[in-house]
Amino acid sequence: MKKFLKFFAAITVLTVISFAGLAQPNPGGNSGGGDVGGPPIGGGGTAPVGGGIVLLLTMAAGYGLKKVFDARNKFQD
Image (cartoon, rainbow, N blue to C red; front, side, top):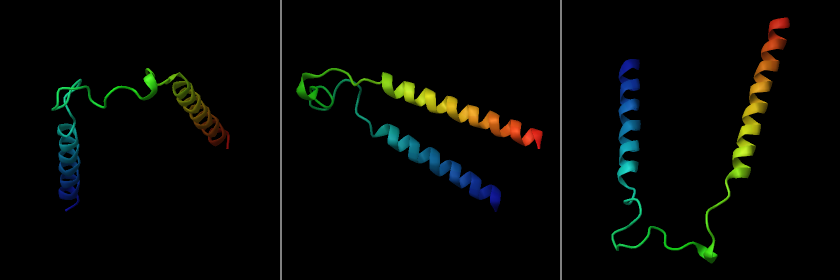
C-alpha cells in the first residue's frame, strides 16, 4: 500500500507540473502578436537582481557555517 501511495503521489506531481508548463504563452509573443506583458511601466529597463543574489549567498554561507558549528559541537560532546 505504501509503494502504491508513493507511485500515485509521484504521478500526481508530474502531471501537475506538466500542466503548468503547457499553460505558459509562447516566449516573445502572444495570440495578438504583441509582446507578452507589454512595455515596461515608466520606461524602465530590467529589475536589479544583484542585491538579491548577494543576500541569498550571504544567507547560504551563514547557514553552512551554522551547520559546521553545530557539527563540531556535537562531535566534541
